[in-house]
Image 1 (cartoon, rainbow, N blue to C red):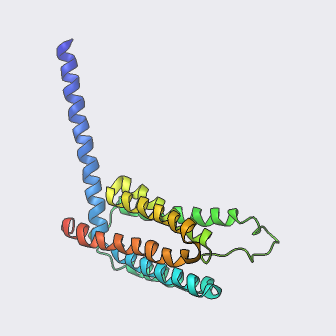
Image 2: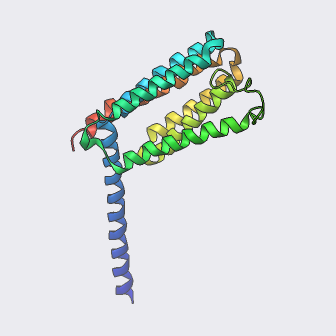
Image 3: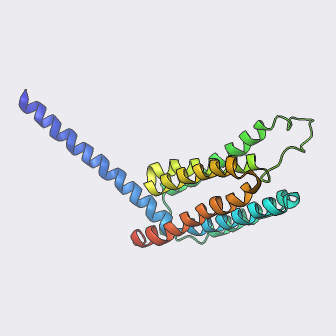
Length: 212
């Protein structure tokens, strides 16, 4: 009986080690795919877009919606064109799932944002649908993005957890303490976080996982 129990424990321990090894290999593969791909460039690009968009929301709110729309279109086109230039060996199933996760998250965020604006019902005026110019909408989309950072960090590393949590706290602090300058605050904090994430991937993951 004792021998059978010890044998079972040894097998279970071996299986557990093999499972942990497979998980670590999957994480390494995903980091390699992200490091070799265009993810860092896209993060820096969207960081610059956030800086420009929120700065416009702060100093020229009347033109903010149109300016944001132009920036988003340019960002989406640039991101789409960049997909075709990524190295073939940078692709991985997990990398594709991460991209799908962000797409689903942002789609739901847009849907929730629309529902939360009660005046935007069929047949009603859309005058209150301020896409990104107002502090509330800015804080909403910023914290949604940081929620994505934290979730991704649970899989890929603590850096993104700490970055997402820190920016969330700073967003709340700016929203309540600096309402008059919130958009400028988010241009620095929100846009800066994307740029920092892109530089982090480029600096560490591209070097550590650049070679297959």
